Amino acid sequence: MTSVADVIVDVIDVNDEPPRFTASVFRFVVVENQPAGVDVGHVAATDGDQPPFDHFRFSLMTSGSSKAVVDGFRIDELSGRVVTTRTLDREEQAEYHLICIAVDPTVTALSAAVPLVISVGDVNDNSPVFPDGSDVMRVSYDRVSVGHVVGRVEARDADEGPNGEVFYWAESVDNNTMDLFSIDPRSGQITLKADVEEPAIGESVVYTLSVTASDLGEPPRRTHMLLNVIIERQSHLGPGYRVGGGTGGLVGWKWIAVTVAIIVVSAVVVIMLLVAICVAASGRRRQTDNYSADKMSQSRQSYNCRRRELEAEEEAATRTALMAADCSESSVAVPISADVTLTAAPQIIDATITDNTPPEADCEVSVFVDFYPTPGRGDGVLFSSDFFVSLSIYFFVSNITRKRLDRFA
Image (cartoon, rainbow, N blue to C red; front, side):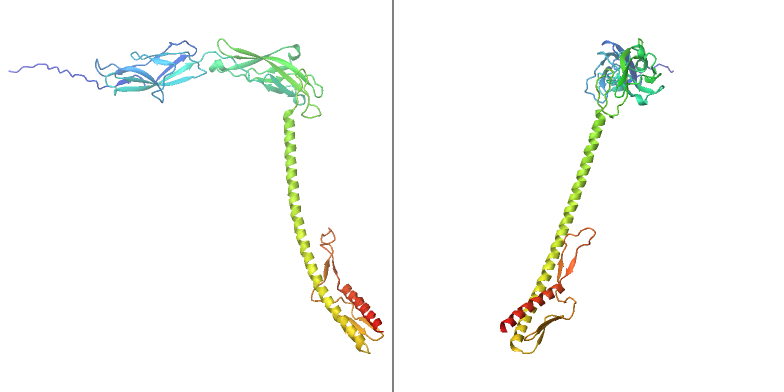
C-alpha cells in the first residue's frame, strides 16, 4: 500500500538584499523665488527582503564630500520626499548635484546610492541693464554720413531663455532728433537717417535719444536710458580740441599721453646715441695721445743720438784746427763730416762743402711737426734736419777757428 502527501517547505528569509533605486539618476526641477518647504520630487527604492527586513532609510549628501552639509534641500528618510529649505535664486546657482543614499537600518553594509540633480527654473525677475558709460556716443562729423552706423547700444539680462532676450527701440526727446536716427531692435545699432547740423570747428552738436531695452518675459521688464549722440568737429589743433554743446570741455588726453611717450622715448634714444659717440671719441683721443707720445719719445731719442755724434765731431774738428794753426805753416785739410772739409792755413781758412746731400748718420734725425693730423693734409709732416745741422756746425767751427787764429796773430 502507498500514500501520497504534500510537503510544504518554508524558506526563512534573512536580511541579505540591499535596497535598489528605481532609476539610475533622479532629475527634478524647482522654480526659483519660491518659499521654503516647496516639494521638489520623490525618490523611490525597493528591498528584495521580506518584512521586517525590507525597511530602509534615505539621506542626502553633497557630491564629492560625505561630511558637507546639504544647503537648500532635505529628504524625508522614510518616504523619500525632497523639499527645499530656503528660497532659491537661479542667477546665484542654476543647478545642484547631490547624492541620495538608501541604507538598511539593521545591516549598514546593505546600502545603495544614486545621483540627484535638481535644476532651478527661471522666472523673469531681472530687467535689462545698460553698462556704465554707454549713455554717451561720440562721432566725428568728418566721418559720418547718411546710412552710417554711428554706434551700438547693448543691454544684458541675467535671466534665461525668452526672459533674457532683449530688444530695443528709441524715441526722440525733442523735435530735433525725430527723424535723424534709427535703431535696430535686435542688434541695437544706431544708424544716421538724415544729414545732421554741421558744428563749428572745435565745437560739437548733441542729440538726445530715449532708448528702451525690454525682455520677452511675461510680464516683460524694461529699462530706459537717455542716450547723448555727440557729433564732434575736430579743430586744427589736433587732439586737444574742445567739445561744446553743453557737455563741457574735453581734452584728448589719450593723444597727449601718446605724444609725450613718443617724445620721452626719442629723448632717451638721442641721449644713448650721444653717450655712445662720446665714449667712442674718448677712446679715439686716447689712442691719438698714445701714438703722439710714442712719436715724441722716438724723436727725442733720435735727436739726442745725433746731437751726441755732432758734439763729438765738433770737438775733434776744433782740436785738430787748433793744432794745425799752432804747429803748421802750411794749410791742413781736416774732414769734419762725409761732405764737409775744413782747411786751416796761417792766413786762410777754407771750409768747403763738397756735397749738398744731407749727411747720413747711424741715427736718423727727424722732427715730428704735427702730432694731431688735419683732415686733407695727411697724417703729419716730417722735416729732415741733417743739412741744417751740418751748416750750423760749419759756421760754429769757423767762428771758433777764426778767433783762435786772431789771438795767435
